[in-house]
Image (tube, rainbow, N blue to C red):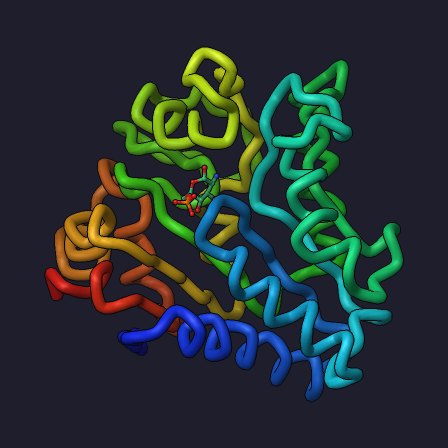
Length: 241
Ligand code: GLP
């Protein structure tokens, strides 16, 4: 595991964007696994800027998002579909048919999960999967539990997760109670993984995930079993290591 700490957010963002740009420059048809939440926003800004400057094209690339809330229309400002349009996909030259996000409004959510896995299987493997981490160690929306799901599935969000995301919705009650998420197995199938973490409130979970026991009680700890993980931390998030 390659752990890099940064004093400045700008440098961290440039390092994350740099990894993705390098992959696309050597393999324009790369498959990227993307994340949402507050953490990746600065990296997406760098990627959009690099595209504006003509440094990188996404015309042949494919992107797969980790997760989506259940029950939010695509057009809802806090759906992950809207988030991705706003922060990245609406600012680069990727054809819409090459952008994949689970459909949280599907009438049959179970078959939507199977469909998502099928499309991913056909396009994959993912060349680089970007991840953030929840305060409870979730990756994607794989919450701590007795057992973890391997493939894409429906998950009940824990109170702590809904509270953490209430800042986007105004209040916890407005945060959807369920989501569709890629499974931990799907995530670990990616050739490379890029974990990005910022802020002092994530220092404890970073330590548990990277140096604690590998346990379903901290889904991110399974990253210790992957052969090619890069971790980008700001000095606050890395202060417990
Ligand atoms: C979210 C997402 C995750 C994200 C994590 C941390 O709810 N489902 O993909 O990595 O929780 O979010 P943030 O970056 O806002 O702290």
